Image (tube, rainbow, N blue to C red; front, side, top):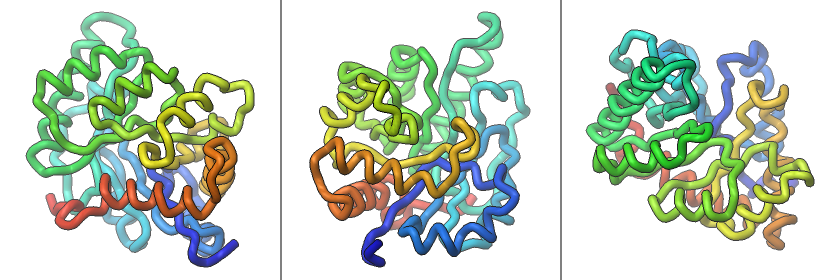
Length: 243
């Protein structure tokens, strides 16, 4: 592969991969040069992850852990997340999820940080809450798998689509159609490794190659255009702010 190619894995749980430090040199040779690591319960060891200059920790709470006591972030962070909504076991649980989500939205607004969104069957509610909270910042919906109409609604709200290894499955026609409809300037690449079907960070290259094929453009174009979007969402000037 040309050394000029560069990719960012915008959602990868390196903290769950014991060998992540040893794996970095090989991943860098593949062109995967930046890694954004989501937090799920205000517990990510940002100090440890942040010692690698190409690794950028987030801070936040996954809706499944919404009952976790709020903890103020420490150190720099690249985004707030992953946060959002999913079906809960009771109305009370869903109320707790929503309260946690709203608090994280407000933090992102105050610190001018992007949101890394998690959504399972709650797009309507998330979009409504973003509007109620008057959120006007940057955001990505991680692990997008929806229809063209769903993609349009996210994009109309300014939310970028996170495309992961699910795109590799030819049976996911709906997702592939959504990718083509969205175009290369409105997507980011991710692996969600190792959580998603035992994926690995190296799968990002497969995701990029698949997107290039489906979009009918070169791998170089996918690299250039998704990196420009990653720069705009996560790495613009004064973007990664100290706590």
